[in-house]
Structures are given as structure tokens and as C-alpha cells.
Figure 1 (cartoon, rainbow, N blue to C red):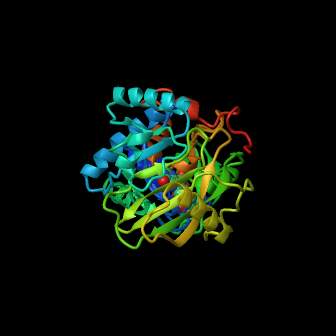
Figure 2 (cartoon, helix red, strand yellow):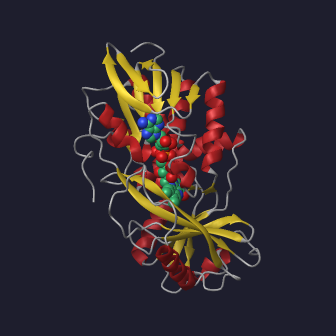
Amino acid sequence: MTASPHVVVIGAGTLGMCTALNLVEQGARVTVLEAQSIASGSSGRSVGVVGSQLTDPFEIMLRVHSLRRFRQWEGEGLRFNHIGYLRLARTPAQMALFARSVEIQAEAGLRSRLIRAGELRDLVLHINPDGLEGGLFGPDNGFLDPHEMCNFLADIVRAKGGAICQYRKLLGVKRRPGGYTLETNGDAVNCDVVVNAGGAWAPQVAALFGQRLHIWPERHEAVVIHLDEPLGYTMPMVMDLVNGEGSGLNFRHEKPGELIAEIHKVKSIAPEDPDNYNDLCEEQSKVDLAELLLERVPDLPGARLGRGWAGLYPVTADHRPFVGPINASEPALVTAAGAGGYGIQLAPVIGQIAADWVLHGTPVSVPGSRSLAPSAERNVPGH
Ligand SMILES: Cc1cc2nc3c(=O)[nH]c(=O)nc-3n(C[C@H](O)[C@H](O)[C@H](O)COP(=O)(O)OP(=O)(O)OC[C@H]3O[C@@H](n4cnc5c(N)ncnc54)[C@H](O)[C@@H]3O)c2cc1C
């Protein structure tokens, strides 16, 4: 490897842009190839929530790294809406897990607290607490606009000498000594290393290298909720799902008089074709969402469902992202993909780990993250 390798990043979603940034910051020459426009894939279809209210210590630790970067970027001008994040608990066992999460987060310098059932309305005046034991609340979590995030990062990458080529699709790969020649719909590009940040398309990109990557494009929908009048408080992100248990309903403030809601669990298990799927919200999904909302927040003033859309979660078999080479025989192809429903909040740390793989041949800055490599044990069909 040369001291300053030329790295081509495939994909200008959150994972590609965070990887590109980490690489240019460390002196690599970086070219991003994006088949469409910046954030045109899953990133631009997400609801942009960044949170740390989880129970698994490794998952929390990954977000500690990400949040550190988000704070830095916020200081540099990226808008981040600190509306808070409330995860609901239905059982005492879940509350016990939340109590441990509060301790883990506190050790890492993150603020969070347990909310008892009787206190839920202090945070969310309109919530119906029936069947709830309480919640876990992080006041500093929130949401951002992923389009804005990707373009913000793109500006820094360009300012540091990186190139971002939009409407430039990777079509073929030729191996040459010490690297690759990449065939595109424009000029061919020679490089030393490729990072596959192709999201739901990452398996297609891997196939151009003769590699097999198991990422499942799973369709998810989100809907805008209009209210007759603004709430007298800011609705935090509210999530009814703990380690797969719960309805999956989630909703949050978008702007005064407007919320965004989603069902994190999906009924369909068929993989979607990322080049040809229904990117609108289905009517039945709106009915399902309305029923869940009526049960959990029955008295929202004049609530009615508005515009809906669908996008893809790039999902792996164990629901953890792939970061690293697929195969020891091809160390110059590094994958940064498969972040499922967490690819906005995990992008900064994934970009950091991917850059470690490129520049050091192994993760050096995030303990335990070698376990995220798409090893033969992990890179298996899901569902
Ligand atoms: C409805 C919905 C809500 C979500 N909400 C959240 C949330 O609140 N918080 C959160 O953290 N995550 C959320 N997610 C998940 C998040 O959006 C994804 O995990 C994340 O965007 C994945 O980013 P990515 O960079 O891997 O992929 P993408 O954003 O899809 O980027 C991949 C890019 O690669 C490009 N590409 C593909 N093939 C090629 C090629 N051959 N040559 C060049 N370019 C190519 C594509 O055009 C695309 O732009 C949500 C997702 C959906 C659908």
C-alpha cells in the first residue's frame, strides 16, 4: 500500500460520505462514485433519528463514537435537532435493562434517565400509558436531515481535496497489480483500494469483484402526521420496541404542527429490488399506523395522515453492519454497508472503522469493531 493511497468509495449515502471524510482527514486521496445524486438512496429516505437508548453495551459504545462526531459537526454548522429520545418499556425486565443502559451511558458521558409510567406524560402529554412500565429517555438525542448531513460532509471532503462524482456508476472491475481499474459510465478510474458503501446495492457492487455479500433490502415506510395546531411542547422521538419486542411504532416532532411516524417492524419478508420497488406508502400501512397511533396517542389535536414514502433498510443476517474486507484474499475491497435501520446514527463510527481498515489493515480506533467484518460466519443469508 502506498503512503497515501487512492481510495474510491462507491456510494454517496451517509456511510460513503462518512468513510470519505475519515479518509481525506487522514491524508488519503479519495474519489466518491455515486450512480445517482448525493443521498439519493436509503439515506435520503430515512427519518434521520440519532439515538443511544439501547441496551447492548457494544451498540451503545458504537453510538458514543458516532455522537462525538455529530457534536463536532454540529459545532461546524450541521443542524441537529435535540428533541430527545424516549424508548418505551412494557415489562419490569425491560426497565431493568434500561437501568443498566443508564449506567453504561453515564460511564461514557451520555445523559439518560429512567422514566416511570406515572412520569411519561411529563414528557409526552398526549401519551396513553396503558400497558407501559415506563421508559428510557435521552434528552440530548434527536434528529437531523440526512440530505443535509451528506451534503455537509461532501463540502468538507471537497475542501480537503476529495472528488465526488455524481451520476457516475461503477459498471465493471479489472484487477491490476496493486489495485483496480474501475469501469464506469464515464472515464475509467485507477485506484489502490475500493470501499463498497453501496447500501442496498452493495451485493451488486460486490458481485462486480466476484464476491458474494448477503445484504437484504427490506422495505420500510414513513408517514407525515398533520395536526390542527402545534403541540404546546416538542414531541421527542418515541419508540415502542425493545430488542424486537413491542409494536415497532415510532413517532417524533418534525416541525410545529407536524410529526413523522413509522412502524419499525415490517410484515413483508421478501427482499426488494433496489432498482424497482414501490417507494410510496401503501394504504394498508397507513391504516395500521393510524390504529397504533390511536391506541398510543389518542388525543393528538386534529391528527390526520399526510404524505408517506418508502425506502430500504440494508439488512444483514445478524442485524449488525458489515465493516471490513469480505475475504482475506481481497484486502483492497472494504465493505461499509448493511446498517439496517441505523445507518444515519451509525455512519460516523462505520466511516471511522472503514477508514481504519483501508489505512491500517485492521480497526485501530474502535475497540471490538473487528467483529463487524463480513466474515464467513456473518456473511450468510438472513431471514
Ligand atoms: C423509512 C426509513 C427510515 C429510516 N430511519 C432511520 C433513522 O431514523 N435513523 C437511522 O439511523 N437510520 C434510519 N434509516 C436507515 C438508513 O436510512 C440507512 O441505514 C442508511 O441510509 C444506509 O446508508 P448507506 O450509505 O449504506 O446507503 P445509501 O444511502 O442507500 O447509499 C448507497 C449509495 O450507493 C449508490 N450506488 C449503488 N450502486 C452503485 C454503483 N454501482 N456505482 C455508484 N454508486 C452506486 C446508490 O445510488 C446510493 O446513493 C431509515 C431508513 C428508511 C427506509
